[in-house]
Length: 250
Image (cartoon, rainbow, N blue to C red; front, side, top):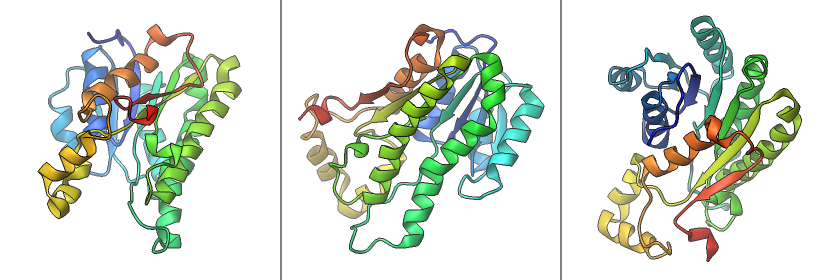
């Protein structure tokens, strides 16, 4: 059942596929008008064509310095304010620490952490006015247990800390800030790994690491993200909820 987002203006980064797309669709189903942000205008347009509540497409690449200004000016010109910000866009690399480059580290931290704070800051006043909500999409990789994901894990660990910090700083403004940490989720992100190692063996091997014995679905992550964004979570802030089938319980 969708939460009630009637009259809500929301922005979702990384909205063109996977978890971001699932969040967009759930927000729209609840009545929100959603700004979809990602690099692919064509893909965003295709998703927007299937939505009900006059979505806004903003083609922007968060790895560029000027992207935040493009996003904020476009969204505020159209919406006049903002109630919900979902920071989902991320760069993910799986590289051994012995081979990682400074450039790769910088890009990962820039998109996954720096831009989240800058984008949140850009929408601070509208969010204060709306007594709104921020949801940051983190990862169970933030625990550091994943192995060859040093830069990615560090960026998500930093994001969890940022979530708590912003929640404390902005609570007096009426803005709630929470996070969702997905575990093993069946999205397009895994396609290169499937091609390289074989889909069946990868699926079976990773599923054995999850107490629930299966991969998660993007819609299951979206359900938790939209709960945190909704009025039903009105007394929840500073939390990052793991949605991982019990994987990090082991």
